[in-house]
Length: 329
Length: 243
Image (cartoon, rainbow over all chains, first blue to last red; front, side, top):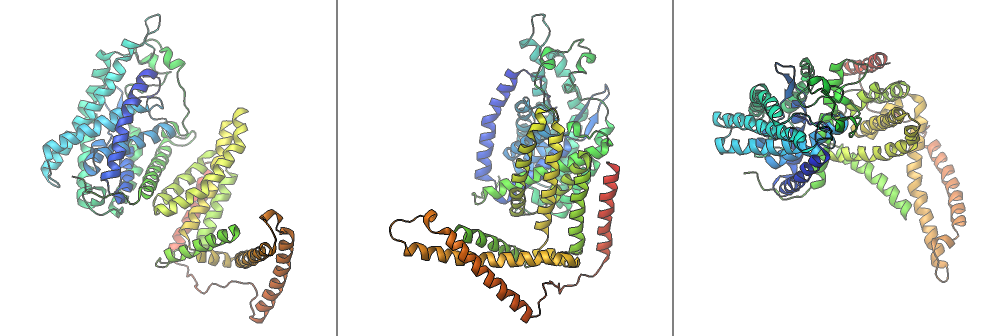
């Protein structure tokens, strides 16, 4: 669901980024007021889980791939505002260092995965689970919430793709950016997310939630512990080592083709906006190193991503120091 | 005054480091092995011909850094930021000459070197570092120089500060530090330092101190040390594989 650069027009990217500014501002204010300072580093751990979830590509028939996001999981554990910021930072790291998701499209990606997904997921979870914890009702709520959250985000992404050919065409009538209209983008995005990717999100959310409730309660804002326990570190280590499993899914996710691939997808031409558009060379594109096995690059990328996220949020928590500590409802 | 403040900051950091490490158990691995691993790592990165080995080391060090408390993370980053920015600026012309990867590789190597040393500094007590150096007899002179430098920075800094104050009190009219006969103060401080050096040498001879720093905590070679030797093997193997 990472929208690359030049799939959305600069105007669309600008609007989506502008829409995210108040969301980020409110989220930061909420975190400052309501999040205990000692829990802020846990946002880094949660962001690391989201980062790792997005590295596990899942294939579907037809050759495309997708992934879980984990935004609903973070919203359930730390609150939707914390989820918004955690996923935003994870997406920023992915865009800048690994080239996963565009730089100009960062606002749109955050709107879908850092705003819509966690807030929808959390609202549904709260509606079903209420105040229940560690029982079936909570897990059912988490599963349904995460499923609806990821599908809502996928629908938003599909609409963002689908309106491009309607709004931005050249003199010859060809699309300047994403060439597929709503009649193609919505089914293409939703079929995968309503089936396999939604299931992946449910499995990831419920499994990690159950693990955290039993073995790593420090990751939840409703508990007082704040130091990372060994089970949590072991789980992160296992997920890092297991990231090469995502390489088994060959194929590119829908809407994430390179400029050289899009003509072969059936549209017959490469939109001018992609040929002459914004070009950014990431340090570790596609989580790989030239000349080395892909699995090694994947594990190294996972290590770098997780380490940076934890460091960033530890420093934010340290800088925040002495904020008010009201508990999360 | 500024010099005294800097010296006090430095000694204050050492004392704070002592307090932080007071309850810490000594490292199960010999400090000499850990210092040696850091030196080998920096050496291999310096001679590696591509960025893969460097990025691997940076990734591992970042992971180690992520496990540290935030105060230590901040100290490491503060040590890192200036050399990296300076190197990036120095190497910037390589980008304009069409070699951006060169700039990136050199900057990453500097980043890696400083990161490895800074993380080692934060994870080892300064006494453990001294113990590591005492294994190689030739390094004792560096420890002695460091020890003497710190002591006499404080003593001579205080002496020259008092001299400056005395000169300014005896001056008539408005005097700023530029007109305060700084050359005389420096000369007097130099003469004083000579006297102190001779006195120190005589004191060392009286106490039979030959400049060798002996560690009274003898580290016994254990299975953890044998396991740590695997780190050496892994570094060399990775270097050869990525050559």
